[in-house]
Image 1 (cartoon, rainbow, N blue to C red):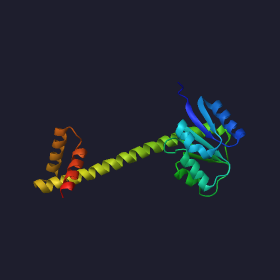
Image 2: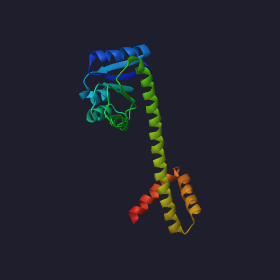
Image 3: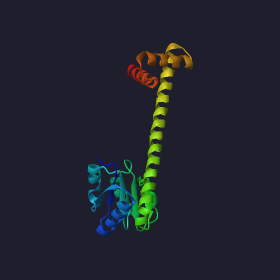
Length: 194
């Protein structure tokens, strides 16, 4: 079983595809697959699950660029896109679509490996940021539910906020559950009763 990074190269022109493959082979041990027809890109990526997607496109339009970017699963893996030229706003559209590296002036064999490394590093950085954002949102939502539950306890029992939290915490410990889970159950139950 190989631990080589799997790279899917999307290039319609066979000669250009071979240049990319050759430069990747010179740069390291990669499992390389070439896709010449981008229309089936999403299905092939779903089937083969590459670690990285490299797309070489001579003259992208906004629609083709976004379609290629979205089909390559930019939230699931790094995507590097090489274009020969780029109209105004296309690089921003590519980055917004999740492309990790957008390189204008086409593919040059000597630049493939450093750009691949940059795309992977950038993808990992954004992946960490997305995870941190999701965790922060979850913590904020849990905090809101805990505050609602404390308010309900304060009203029902006539206690202050610290005492309400102590009641929630004790219930969580007694049930071997998280405070946020006990608070959510309380809020849900009170919602059903009102």
